[in-house]
Amino acid sequence: MSKSLMVFLITALLASVLASCGGKIEENYVMTTVREASRGKLLSPGFKYGFDTPNFIAAQGNIALVREGNLIEFFTGEGIESKLEQVKGRRFTVGARKLYSPRIHFTVDFLAAGGDTIKVGEPYDVKFPALLKTIEEENFKEVDVSSLGPSTLQLKDIYNTKFLMSGARVGWEEVEWMGSTVMVFTLNLDNVRFIVDEPSDSMALMLKALMNENLYFEGGIAYGDRPPTATRDYRTRTKIGGMVTIDFIRYGGQVAITPI
Image (cartoon, rainbow, N blue to C red; front, side, top):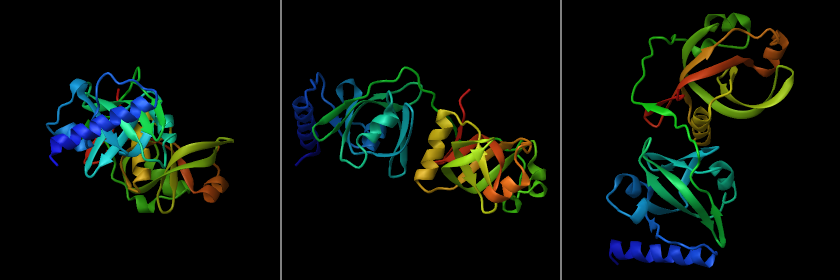
């Protein structure tokens, strides 16, 4: 069977499935792969494409990442993070439109799983992480992170410093902090861990991708001073050395920085 005939038959099947779910389709979504839709020459009216259970590796608010082999693409949609939870563990189809601004990405119109069709729609505002090929690292101190620990003696060399970190595992966990129990991202080294201070949605997306793909954090962070409430007993018990902010993350062969 020819490739063009196969695309036509799958597209017709998708239209039939959606119509049976009560949805009316004015334009067909051409079923294809993420790579073909993103980098290939396959054209579709309205740049509408359908994807069979794409590998969403992370989602945060209105933005998500899909991996296909070594290719990673951005998908957006109103509440895409919560709506993906509704099809978790199921086979599903994504109907999306390819957009070219502010960067090439796909905005999701619907998710279809079994007899359910979940409308998504284009979000009002999305801030993509700025992606660079390289970044100047002169302003970041080289630190032997294996020597870091929760004691003041082990932390004093990074007070009020921007430094490079690699080899840390990303966590999303409940911790005691400043008298409260909160859910936070953590960067976990062998002898100490740091709380990530209120990352933007774009940085949270990257942290989730690293965590979900079991990859190490590599990037540049800034450490302030030891909070006065972080007692020695607390640091010894929790191994938390304090709070850091993220300047950049290396991921997927690029450098992600928080958009201005």
